[in-house]
Amino acid sequence: MPAIGSLLAVAVALFLYLNQGLKPTAEALGWYREGLKRYTEGRIIALTKALERAIKLSPEFALAHARLAEAWNELDSPQRSSDAMLRATGPGMKWRAIPIACFYRPCIRF
Image 1 (cartoon, rainbow, N blue to C red):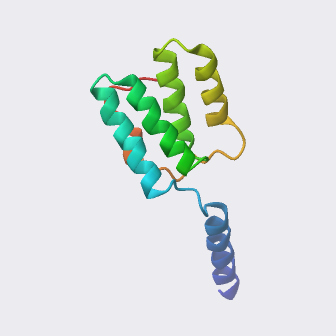
Image 2 (image 1 turned 90 degrees about the vertical axis):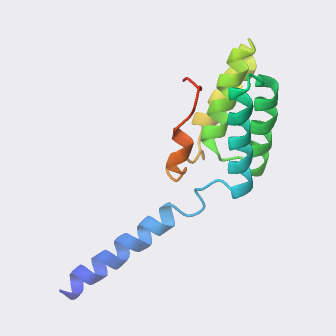
């Protein structure tokens, strides 16, 4: 039985180590949500500004990069869109610990 307890402790420690620091900051998440509001109002430029602020606060916030890529695509800026999507899928991007509410996106399509 002590071996099971040790194994469980190692598993929990490994899980915590692998998931440390994966969440965007609260302020970055706030700017992300602000951007979604601007999108529903049809203000795509304001959306890009809000997402850029979110990314500046949490550069590893992959979902904000992906939404920014989508916004640039809607603004007919394929190079900027491509650059943002490459950053969203690049090394160091953190998708796993994004709050589930971020995936419910009113009016935003992939």
